[in-house]
Length: 293
Figure 1 (tube, rainbow, N blue to C red):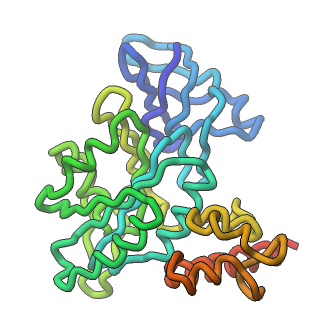
Figure 2 (figure 1 turned 90 degrees about the vertical axis):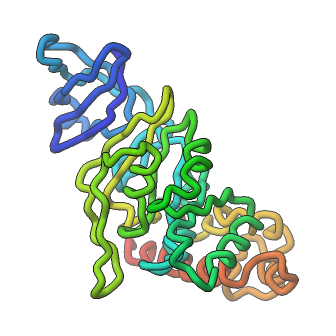
């Protein structure tokens, strides 16, 4: 029997099949082969106790996508949630995540949440930069359910992961989509305005047929080291058009003169702020690569 892993808690898996949900453990052979079933995996199970819905995972189907942290398989779309205020927008994190989504070939959507708290409407500058690149932007005020209908529509027929730092409102948005308190809402610490992570397990919630949301801990420690520094520029998708204009093959777009990217910035075709964050991420990746050796 085939099913989808919708939850994982300390080596116990909930498997959704056409008929019902089973609680399963994994065969010992997976540990031997150093493979761990994860949420989002399509698996084959053997039922060992029908009455109590108990089963064993026998096989894991080939994954189309795999994310190491948090462990997730076969997602098709990532919703990157950025708060307009409290906590302040973390655009460096956003750019890391967008680059990783491009690397994984997963659709990316940006949600600007808590727009009501941004009295100066500074989030409009963020919206302008990313819309120009070509990303879908949705403005939301999760507490008042503003933007929820549009967000719900874009989730259809996808396994969606919600990503973003703690406190940006991921759980509140998910609760708004379901119109039901299914995930514990995080509190923003008044002392330091930083979020407290309240989600402890990875879980898929079904919205409609073939439509799921993953509520996952761990994205605040997002690691994109699978991307090599020399390849980073191609995952900043607005750069691609201008890379052929670089004088040198293998241009890093950092120190070189006659660089197509730098020229595009001067001409206003690439945002200076995006380029500066590219340089920071490039340096981080380069430093990690050097430490490896």
